[in-house]
Image (cartoon, rainbow, N blue to C red; front, side, top):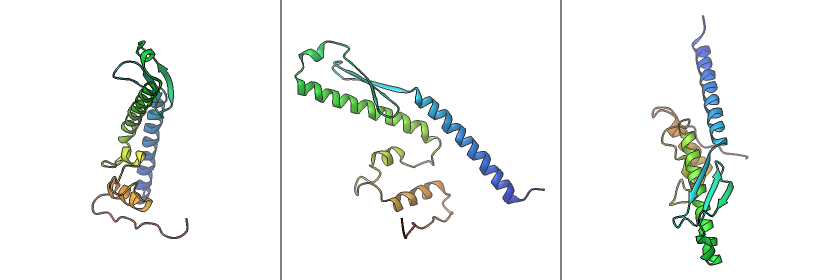
Length: 148
């Protein structure tokens, strides 16, 4: 006969294996995921991979030829930024199913989790993660103190 603790350990290990398999699948999907954004004036199209690395820049029309250098440069910067934002949003969306509900993952990754006071200090961030992950009646561990 197995003990309740043994059953809990077995369930935790089984859940860990499910999570690992889900992460492996998401990583495989993201490995082949690309985001392409075309500028509104169609002068440039930028493709980035799931990490935001630029993999292609194309000029679908000849509109770029009549643009001044600074104008084309600004268009490239804006279009690359939009493609990276789209890739980040796609990556976050892929992993959200594995994270505790309500955890502002995209805000954490972009440093905008607390726009009034800047990025969250690590102790507040961890407290928020535990708050979201644990039931309302579960105790939240205090922030760690001491040597780093």
